[in-house]
Length: 307
Image (cartoon, rainbow, N blue to C red; front, side, top):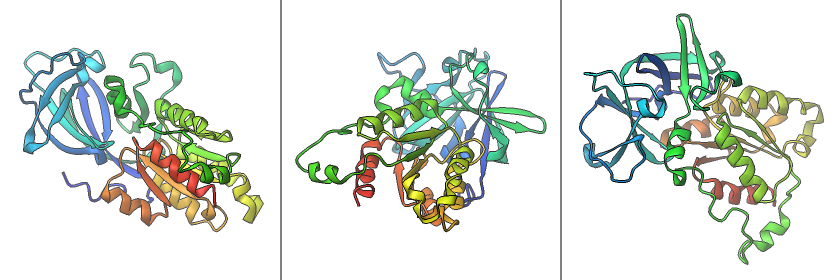
């Protein structure tokens, strides 16, 4: 699937693939989707969770099939084999079994809001956003959480986080652990995991937001400090996919401003690949990491805050 037109640098737009599970409408960022195909037979995996239908291997790539009907507890219509949405994110290949695929909708992240907390019970926090359309709404699922709930090892790789070894002790002595770090991450699961990892690594002055707009407003509130702005905001760690304002647009807004442009920005996203790295670099991101790589991110954070 050609995704070359997607997420043009800093435009704050995205394209959602609209699909159905039963009669309920959901969406996924098309940047995560590599292929759409009719459901085909899979090989069962003994001992796999109930939500995992099995595995199959199109084009020599072994792919795990996750049944969204079971994840969302929505019955599959008899006689409808459904479709497979094949995705690549967090360096994983996963196919999601859905009832039907409707089409692609282009919209701005400003048209996407966080779901009300009172409405989160039905799908246990699996919805990260609600896209508002003229003719209705599309619920955006937290596919990273769905995969991490199936296999905890597919979450953040925290190997080595907070360990003091002879190789890095001298560097750690120079790290400013009192520096203020801002996080922009819409997934409640990953937001907490990043916060916990930073605390384990020794950082205490960490503040997090669930969308890019709130993070931007917070950082810009210190513009009156001028050249001393990094005394309040030492570094930003941002997701790319977020309601209201995505990470690319957030990065561009900050880097285009001579005051906030001095703040280092790390993009930390499941979408990081060669294409996204080019887009991240074009808007001024200082570093980019794929979501499992929290350990590598923190090592780089040590480098930036020990200078």
